[in-house]
Image (tube, rainbow, N blue to C red):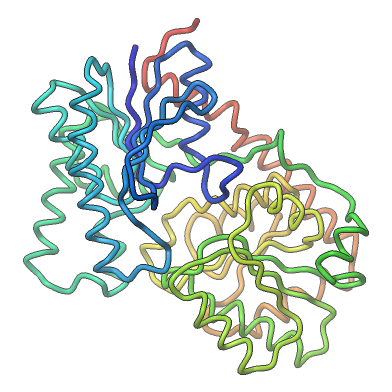
Length: 394
């Protein structure tokens, strides 16, 4: 077999960011499958690298989390078009695994199926175009309908569909018929992340000795609604809570969020910028509470954010400020709580029982790790991925 993975945002552990596609590719290589990844790079020339047996083609298509919607859209379309050209040069591909977002990667998958007779599996991490429409980025009715038509065509043409959450699966099932939709959520890397005692050297390094730490590790985009995170820090300070907040990530709204913190003269928050996985692990070590934060938009409740699964594996108390399946899960398994996005004081009120009761905190953290091991262990989900792709045992 020779499998092509199309993913504009392919990352390695050393680089930082989401590394789901890296693990998918590694699983294929370990099964003896010739694995090719086509991805994008901010470098000015096309390069090919061998990364642990994965043949990675880096296309010179600039992209940055700080891009506005128009710049992102141009980058998405440019990458899809260039991917088609490179894939045609590679040749003899057995199967294409196309990873969205963005939805436009489906254009490349459709073209390769038509021209080269390559079947494709389509992975859906976020529901497009629903997400940009509900966030107010796409207002033109005719463009909306065109994108919905493209979405449906991609689903119908795919040999199989991988949804990263049950709500995403349910949404797709309303648009197409058949039993080709599989749920493979993001992974909890239970081999890399572990519940640990706080390292005093790391506490000193991050200047949080004797503090409770609430961390947010992820994108700082419009969808993440991080004004809420800042308001939680502000209200915690006003109520004299011994909490320090850490925000690790980058994105279009990072400068706005930093400016808001400066305006409020918050000394109980640290911005680290984008960090690699080793640094994420260090931050997790000193973290008591991991916050998963989204803007109050219904479609965002269907997502499968990496930060949630890393926090579970690390055995952290989870705070979510949105409804949906994650809210239900953390409440059912008693590993976190929901904080009202319209009233940040709700966070302050609900965190107090954990600050005042170390045993309660420990119990919730233990439940988080148990949930990671039971439902989201990377090895188990990768086995399911290989079954969906019908990759034979070596």
